[in-house]
Image 1 (cartoon, helix red, strand yellow):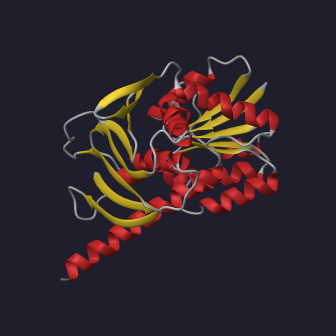
Image 2 (cartoon, rainbow, N blue to C red):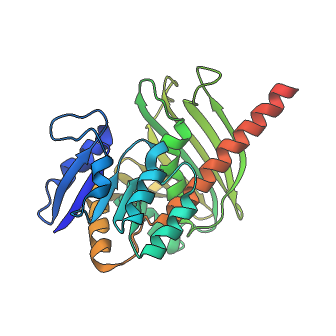
Length: 302
């Protein structure tokens, strides 16, 4: 029986709890959130003195991820950290997990989506030819957000590129954003990346940004032989303007993701969404934000 404690019980945290509670091989020893609530502790101090915890699920706000993951690892606990792994210091967490011999996994649920995995297979089989361009569009829920859209939604798409291209180094070429308030977080962001001869374009938005027409979540991978489109639960391979092969998701990616975490804790195997991949995603996003600030400063100075 894997004994877990969860930090954070917001919208996504509640979804995690709902999945954990369906499992007979997991016992939730405590749930902590400063807002409290039925069955939820408001104070986390007692958690770090407990002796009945095997793993911590970190679903707290992104700014808390690094500190919570570090404290768990220092106590010899495994850690599952929702995306992003950290806003800074991701590489240090990777090193700490390795030194402790503990599993540190990132909640990149997109890496457990059957459609995304089918795209990876088509790329590996050479069905697309040489990759020329990868484009992403991802839109979150409406309403005010306190987190920059790039940190909130960008990890999904950067994680997909990292997985599809076997961790090929990504270079930020351009980055810009839109915010309803000059000093507030960006509700919409555009990032241009490049790896080898492949261009990667990200467009993400939430909050008060106006959603574009079409599917809110879409990825297209264009090669010299064919193009793949990933849209919702459906991945399709196109050649000559027609879909020649289609794969539709059959299993909930979150269920597959949590299965992987439990399996890795028990066997010591490396998870698909391991901490090293999470740290690479953090580095790309941090570079994109820094590039955006530099480019904005240059425009203002003109």
